[in-house]
Length: 445
Image 1 (cartoon, helix red, strand yellow):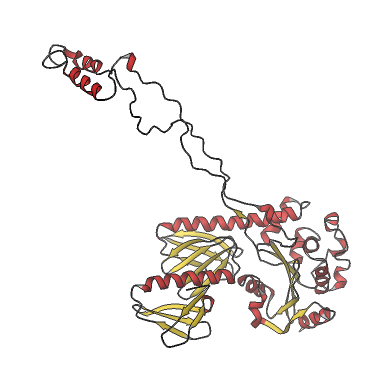
Image 2 (cartoon, helix red, strand yellow; image 1 turned 90 degrees about the vertical axis):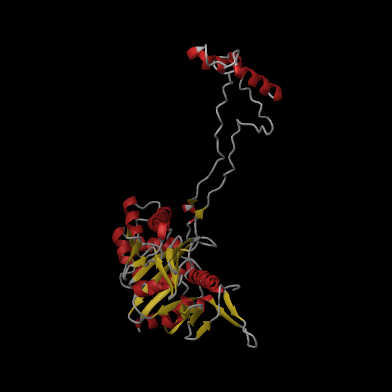
């Protein structure tokens, strides 16, 4: 295992490097034999593994999980759980399950309620069967709690991002928009305009590069969005008369997708120690009675313990025998032997900044935006995918319906090159002078 590859080097044969992303399934047809089914249909069997079997299966599981996370552009560091033979990873934006049959990603944008029953965690997913995770042992409740927290945090990030992007928008409108504009989900412009007139046009003006505004205008039929991009969006927010009907003719949908984690680890802690208790190694001579420390004090205490009579302080002293014995040993009410009152311990800890999310780092502008802005345009001939805030060289046109294309893009981390099989013929259109006519022709079918 090295650099994302499983390298097989059989004796007398050429070396075979296999990327983890090309491994479809991992099964055990018989004891100590591992069968790999490759994405291209090939099958490889590794036998006579002996004690290496467990290590091989674990490394294959980890490698396939890393490959699946990279392919889906998972955001943040993973919390890892073991569910029987499967590995469960919880990222900032998605749940990733890697098992014998492959990897499955569930975006938190499409996840619903999380339930726990009979040591099984069930995650409701929009548009498909729920995901059921079992054999988690004592970590069942921990996983359910983490999933619930991450789903809630994803919604908080969306709301904070929109509130910062649109400071003049009413809080209730921000809440409604955040409920629709979940991470990676494209929302029809008509639905956004229903929350606030001109909201879709304002979002595009704020997020799009100048040359992308012209592209969106063409996708939305330029006559319906005349003047788009020629006004100050912040100053004109709420006065979007020219774009009030934006997108209703072109069936445009606007979306945002987080690209980088804004989670910040805890910082600033230091080891704690009691500043009031100074080190005293070898200094155990704390005064405990009337006798001096050392051997002489021990011998004197032994003599006094016998008391003045042959039977010590027992016979003849009655109920006061024990009292006089303690007094002779330096205890009781011997004021000279009282211990000094210890100072109150200083329990001051080092200052700690707890782990948190830097919501101010969510930005759609700048050279390296942490949020991707995009639009999808539905036409009879397909769905166009256009990035707004990055200088992408081409526009992609896919077969199918808008919602299905949106979900497919989300599954591959919005890397359209990985959906080449779903492109219409000549579905990559460069941004040149012929771009408007070619896009119009492709969308018209």
